[in-house]
View 1 (cartoon, rainbow, N blue to C red):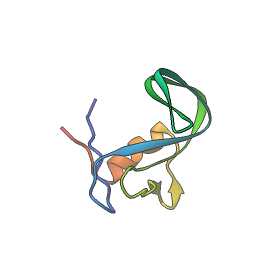
View 2: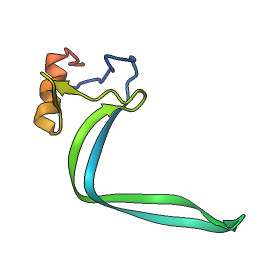
View 3: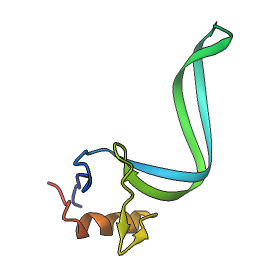
Length: 90
């Protein structure tokens, strides 16, 4: 097993996002209060159910990962992107 480290080829930042569609997100809320007619709260737990990966992108600049013009949308493609972009880490 080899670790990888994402570095965006467009902006150089290091945070990668997985964008999913058709997903159910459940959030546990606490510390609810009403302020100026709106409820404010703190989210203490969040879970995702089902869903399909639509694409992977840089959190900073929204650069979408592609291979030969095709959007990377699964873990096998993501592994291939890391290898082809020489981002194999330690």
